[in-house]
Image (tube, rainbow, N blue to C red; front, side, top):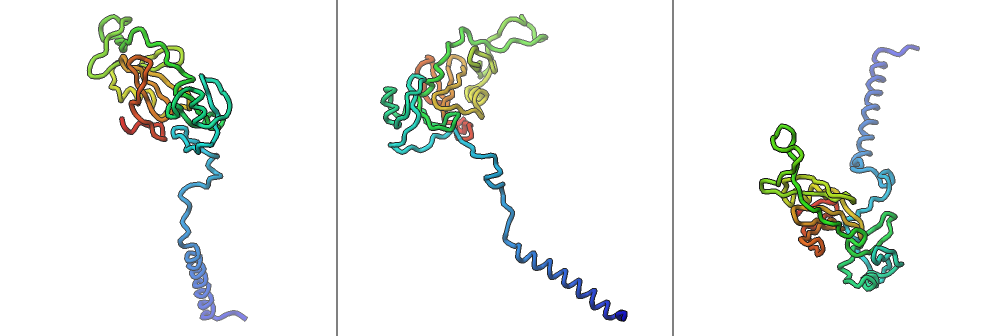
Length: 221
C-alpha cells in the first residue's frame, strides 16, 4: 500500500536527523586526537648521527684508539691519551664512518699543508684596466681568503673579513675525529677540527677561534 505524503515526509526528516547524529558522534569520538606533527621514526630513513657533538663517555668505556694516524686497538679514553702522550682534552672523540666510537689526536690524520708562497688577491677582469695576468693586492678592510683542496691552495676571495672567511670555508661542514680542513686568511692558517675552528700564525701552534654547534654552524661569528 502506498505511503501517504505525510508519512514520506516523516521518513525523510528522520533519515536526515540520523545522518546528522552519525556525523556528530564521529566528531565527538575523534576529538582531541591531533594529527602527529612529524612522521614516525620508522619512516624517517633511519638514525641520524651528529658528529659535531662528542658523546659522553664512561671512564671504563673502550673506544677505537688511533696513534700517529694508525689504529692501535680498543682502549679507554685515558689509556688512549696515554698511548699518544697527551692529555685526554687533546683527543677528538666522535663517530667514524662506520658509526664506531673513536678517539684520535686533533688533526692527526691531516697535518697542516705548506703555506702558499704568496697570498694573492683576485685578478682584475677584462675591461677593468691593468694587466689581466697580474694579481693585485687586496684592498679595503678585508684580507685574502684561501681554501686548501688537499693538493693546492685556491682563493675564495681577495677581500674578506676573518668571520666571513670562516663562514665561507666551513659553514655547514663538520669533520670526524683526527680529520681537519685547512684554509688561510692573510698570514693566518685556519683549520676546522671537530666542534671548533682554530687559527695559527706559525702554521704549527693552533688555538681555538670559534666553537661549532651541532648544526655545523658558528653562532659566535
